[in-house]
View (cartoon, rainbow, N blue to C red):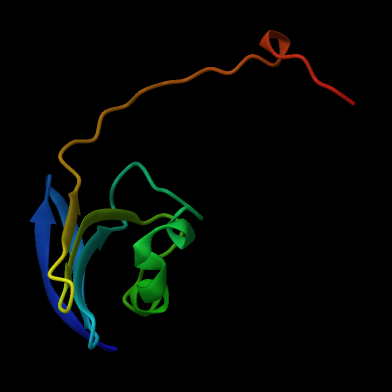
Length: 104
């Protein structure tokens, strides 16, 4: 596939880095930020974005990054999938070890 850098754009007030990856089967556009107070370290290898992870890393994607927009168009199957971050809210979750039993 061929990867090109897109102009930065602001999503939810965060400066986002954009890349476009195109292959014979699909066109994918991604925008991510390293400025958000949230991230998903290690979770992208389970998503369709994993095919483009090296391209994202070359553009500055790291364990502090948050994918704000993923827009994938399939050329041959005429499919389309778009995921866009529409809000970030703080949600504190407390896990108490005493609430769980452990089997040996």
